[in-house]
Image 1 (tube, rainbow, N blue to C red):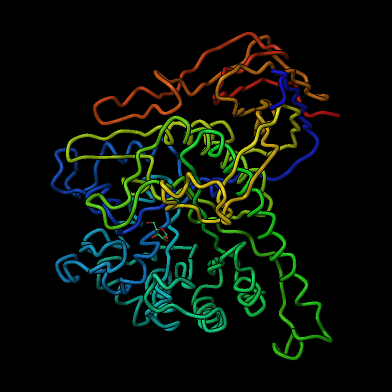
Image 2: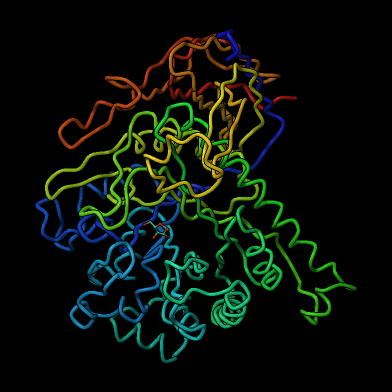
Length: 531
Ligand code: AHR
């Protein structure tokens, strides 16, 4: 490891990487484990309102100001026909058997109207995942008609019969979930899936041309899936959905999760770039196989609609995949958010997976709730980089060695993780000790810096070069992820505040020291844009 404890950070306010949008900060409530049933919706809890929604959980979700809420899955989507999740609760099937994840009965009481109302209350959009596994393209279009049509037609009338005259106006849809996987009923090949989607998107958009539709991508280990899907759907699909989970039970390795995520985005961007060439292929396969060349009005974006740290808990345990997060995980999560935000130009939406109990930042029992370490990190980054634009920043800092699974490590076997020679591992010699993200507020009056200091055992002296940006005040706001204990400290129901956010006003300084293993946010008032 480089022995210096110094780093330089140059912020280039005139180099925009992307625009910050609320859709980069989504939440995901799945009819899985205790996420919805027994989580946000828990009529038996003394903390629940008359409609069964837990007020404490609702407040914790509100504090994250989500741009959208994904529902009902995840893998759960494949076990629900949309018709089971609408209408009077007494007329819905009582529960469906979610045969994945160890087999669980999941109540249908918190259905689509309830998810829509919750999203509204959170100030968020609803992002509905459609059952492309066991339902038809026709069903998908009927769902859009039910939700969005104001015409006097069968499914819009069904909505009216269910007591709602006004269309819901849901604009975000995903077609299926991880449909490439043998863990899903209705698994399809890329070609079968692409045909299903082509038909569904045409029918869905015939009902409401203003919707935006994401299709399942797979990512790095199998780019052929993405190529096949995008070849068929370029010009039809608006977004390519991607999932990835990260983490390893070693501090340095956890800090390398962002490196794997970075590669994942680069590979996905390349797939989308390739797809953008398809409409140009007048003399090629595109012309032969697609007949008319597709018209593309906008480059498809990435829907990173499942991401998180997930490396200890398993499906089928009594509390299905309920992960307890350490302080170190919170730093890794902040660093992953940096990667997402740095790619804001190509990411249309992103949501941490999931919101409550199941691999989630919020944990509950019947009476109590705890915001885990990762909840605090998510809030720090979400609040720091609110609307505005992400700008380039370059850090020159010491580096260290680490390793990380190449893909979807989630569910890493903790015992196996000790084997350093696994072929699934990628070794890095140069994980930077300082991971910084810079953004400029929408009103152009504040530079926001989030700084993850990744050295576990020593402080880092940072020299800041604002490169033309001029501080407008002698003070700045500093927010920190504070902890009582070491990097493996957790928040628990009994000790909910060991890891927390602390805020202070401090003198502005172009040289400062970041403590070992830390997350610090600086909000620096500035005079205006750099020349
Ligand atoms: O619960 C998390 C699961 O992980 C989601 O259902 C699925 O989409 C992913 O494999």
